[in-house]
Length: 183
Image (cartoon, rainbow, N blue to C red; front, side, top):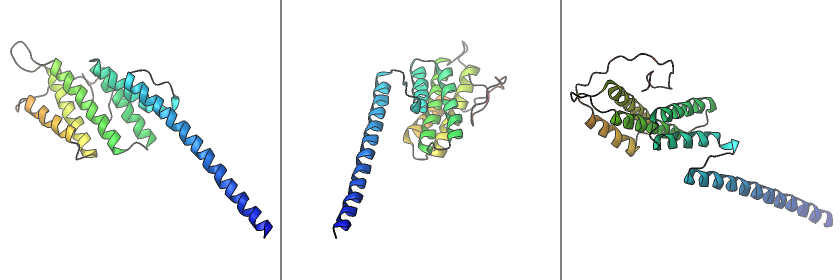
């Protein structure tokens, strides 16, 4: 009987020790995640290598916020490529990346608006067409994303119905599921 109690106590102690170690590890990971979140909120650089994907996402976001649309789109496209390689990125995150690509292309088109005769510039037309593709791809991944639906309808309202997109020279950089040659 005494030996039986000792074995039960040893098993209970082992379970307790495992629980304590697991709790400490989870606490450490929560602390790291809070540091990353704080860096994102303040616009600081994320230095932890375990969060390279988040660092790239934040970099692309802040480039778009500073009106550096071309580099923002390139960084988001690189995120899509790395998401394809990783294979563990959810459709919601992929949809958000496409949505952000569409937003940056839409804004890029808006700043290039019109020629002196009132017609849309070719760069704006091209940016709008690619933004449309990006929003549609976002909606394919997450059909109920209301922000992408709204922006796509807004884009349709901005572009003329008879808009013709001239053929562009390929830039040599192909973005995942987007036409070649971003503005």
